[in-house]
Image (cartoon, rainbow, N blue to C red; front, side, top):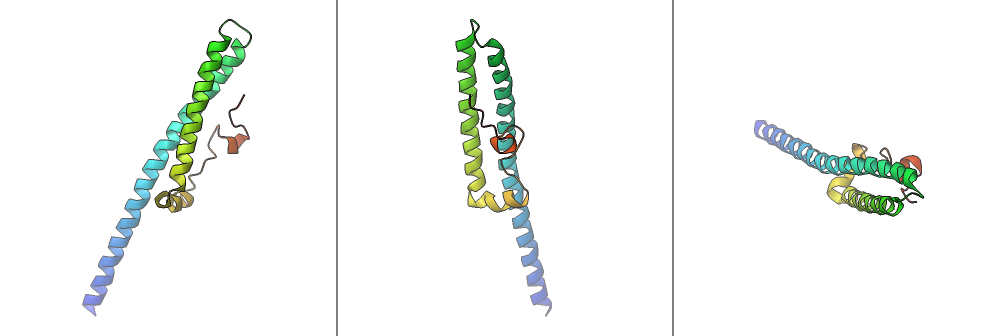
Length: 116
């Protein structure tokens, strides 16, 4: 009786430690990618405003190229984040911790996909 109870206790502690470690690693991966997505989203907004100010001016093409580059980087990071979120190891913790794509500036939050 004591041996069985001790075995179940050790198994419970092991499973709990595994789940905590699993959620911690998934949270770190997803939050890092989300922070970089938020940072590049802010940069896209800044460069979009600069492009709107510069439209028709002498630096129009340069501002357009910079904005296009930022948009390309944003889309790549967004695609990587979605891929990371869909991985089987991150899907359950991401769903439980509500780590999805609708952050500030994403297309699902505002309906804007950062296209010109």
